[in-house]
Amino acid sequence: MTATLTLDKSGRVVLPKAIRDQLLLDPGTELEIEAANDSITLRPVRPKGHLRKKNGVWVWSSGSGKTLSQQSVIDLIDRTREERMKQILGEDD
Image 1 (cartoon, rainbow, N blue to C red):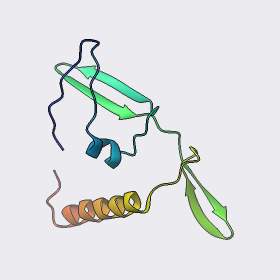
Image 2 (cartoon, rainbow, N blue to C red; image 1 turned 60 degrees about the vertical axis):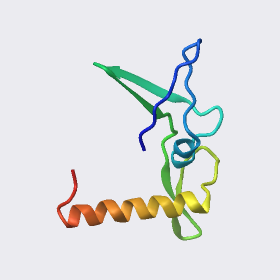
Image 3 (tube, helix red, strand yellow; image 1 turned 90 degrees about the horizontal axis):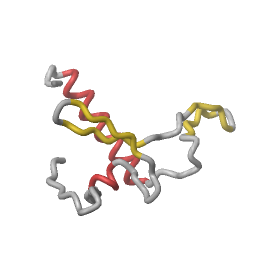
Image 4 (cartoon, one colour; image 1 turned 180 degrees about the vertical axis):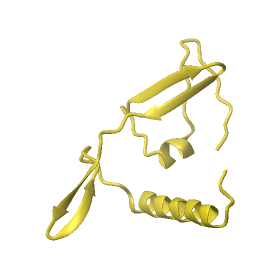
């Protein structure tokens, strides 16, 4: 998604809701900023997840204690499938 943002007098920007939802950004989420040449990159600071066995099943834990919405999991699976299909078909960038 591409969007045009405007800085306010204090130098702040508001990230569009669609991007916040896609990246699971909640109020208080820390972002890492990187400036290089004429570009700015923002990345969410996430705790490192880990796999553990729970009742004999491998379960991934984000370490944040937050649960993912069903829609965000479905979106992640769909994006991953699409990326794999592009790789298989040789369409990856």
